Length: 131
Image 1 (cartoon, rainbow, N blue to C red):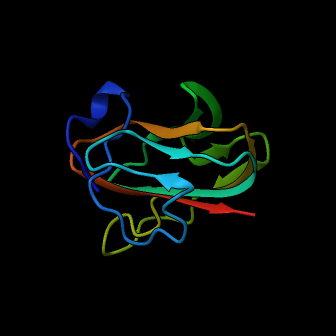
Image 2 (image 1 turned 30 degrees about the vertical axis):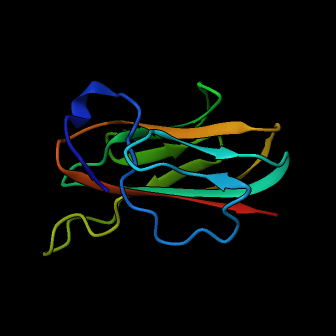
């Protein structure tokens, strides 16, 4: 997903679905900012956003932030689990992006979305898997 107008910090509209292993559980519509997870329970969630400078990204459940990946000077702060140290620039640019992999306990019919604050033209993905 190429993200226009990224500086606003608004919800990311998703425009491509690569794989949906359970269309009855993962409800997705083109250019909508949320994916509905019908069944309650534990989910693996991952996201990644790639741009020249690392952005700030939040995962929302029913409009409320539950996880954050935040660029701060020389490291990224993920949730409360610690720091990711930068190792220096790569000749091809920012090849690692800002990524997150975690688990959440979702209520029934949870609307999952991401907000993005950063450079225009970034690319990103959101992955969800029912455990």
